Image (cartoon, rainbow, N blue to C red; front, side, top):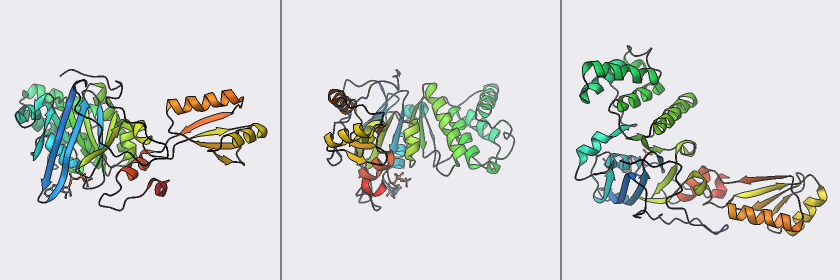
Length: 352
Ligand SMILES: Nc1ncnc2c1ncn2[C@@H]1O[C@H](COP(=O)(O)OP(=O)(O)OP(=O)(O)O)[C@@H](O)[C@H]1O
């Protein structure tokens, strides 16, 4: 499996949208032969339970060595996607390749290349953290000596060395999650699925989990993350996809997604009241704030729009003392894109 830099340019840039227009819900193209090597790719994945369609043609392309976050409201099908891609559940239709292996034709090879942690924890509470690790080492057919070496190293790395001889059921939620990930790493997987890894954790444990993810990625591991926390996706993911109605409603970097919803603006602040007044009279689309001597100019924050604003200021000889770009946050994007899901959806205005 070749690796690709997480800093590679966007594989399928989102289309530019009309500023005042509605959100483009179109699915981004995913079957492009010019793509870089994928750790995970899927085309047209489908899954129904009874007459409920959970996945209705899911397309994915996740470059090796990157973090991909799948967001979606409760019941959107995030866990179902993880279960399919990790061979725990079979899809009704579509194709997927994980670590270069076809999911349907070579599920054993897929299983050997991946690790899965999250909502279905593998931790046995009745035995110690160390015993859990050694059990894992046995499952991976490591020799006793090698198993002890790997277990000790991982327990140390995840801050569990002191608690190693205590039963796992005495661990805090954060410690259990760390043990779960440590157990997954015994097999040195190149791809890890983390299904809601920080749900229920306090902020400190959440940050320590984020650090673990960053370290995994620095080691070249590909991380497929599902999360309810938009900040988590924002912090960790190279690319984020929002799952809604069984399909990917939008996909891109956090910044690209934020540009999808209206509400972004540039704030120009002036020290000189006369400069402020002339700018306000010329920039008709701007919302003035007389008290702060500031103008709020609608903008998607793109380089093109910023350049045209700066060019305009230059041409008119108006000098702003401060220019700040404000993009909507991921909450805005999430609410806007998942309107129509099972629970009441809010418009971007409602959440601003
Ligand atoms: N084994 C099953 N049998 C029947 N329905 C199922 C089964 N597994 C999942 N579902 C249904 O499929 C839908 C998607 O479930 P899934 O757990 O994938 O959602 P999710 O996005 O992970 O949600 P959450 O954020 O709440 O964990 C839900 O409506 C769920 O009830």
